[in-house]
Amino acid sequence: MLTKKHFEAIAEIVRSNVTTIQKPEEETYIKAHRFIDDLSNYFLEINPNFDKNKFVAYATYNFPKTNLEYRFNVNKF
Image (cartoon, rainbow, N blue to C red):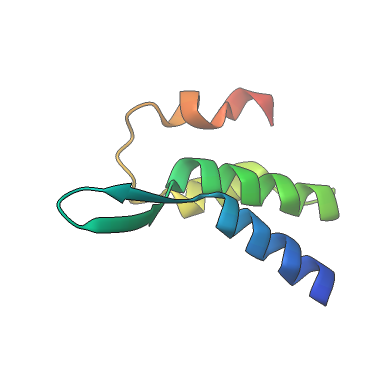
């Protein structure tokens, strides 16, 4: 079961991956690859049976496939 501690950690992961850029207008976005990697690392930390490969594959299903292996270091987990 997720506790307040878990939700706070997840919120911090989200917050640390949000970037605001100035174009003609201010725009805020999440760096998706880093966010998914950080989130999956946290899930692995709290659950040693967590399957990071499956999570990354599911979370990035519709992403352009260019450089996915490099960005996620697929062979390392």
